[in-house]
Amino acid sequence: MSIKTEATIEDLYQLPDNCKAEIVNGKLVLMSPTGFLPGRAGGEIYASLRDYKRLTKSGYALPDNVGFIVNLPHHRSLSPDAAFYTGKPTGGKFLNGAPVFAAEVRSENDYGETAEKDMASKRRDYFAAGTLVVWDVDVLKEEVIRVYRASNPEEAQVYRRGEVVEAEPALPGWTMLVDNLFV
Image: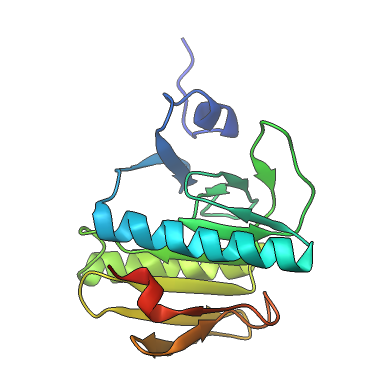
């Protein structure tokens, strides 16, 4: 009898339909569905990214639940809530490498000391994998978007209601009204 010690990419492919997970520290980490405001915010970001893709005719705008295979010590896969990818399409398989832009939209359980540490660790992994900009989107409590860049990964630029957020240098010229994330 063999004992499986680490989750594999093949394990991700075997998950039930509409199940979201990442491989973190060798284990499958399942992610629960989100609620109305975070789900809507992720959809708004994706729609804006899709418009940017159509305008620039470059890259791919991707919604929630798309898997990215990365080769990092702590992360083997990433699944942001919205993303922009400039690599090669892979048909029905997960994408190879990290997106240039990733949005992580906080759900109800993404608050507190442990959640903050986990999110900071995941941002570091995004940057180590090649992502240029990561948004930490909070539509439930502070109503802000924190923009982190690979060039200064520990310091965020904060955008609030009434402001226009961007994702330079990952997406040159792309902007979005913060207010579009709210009802």
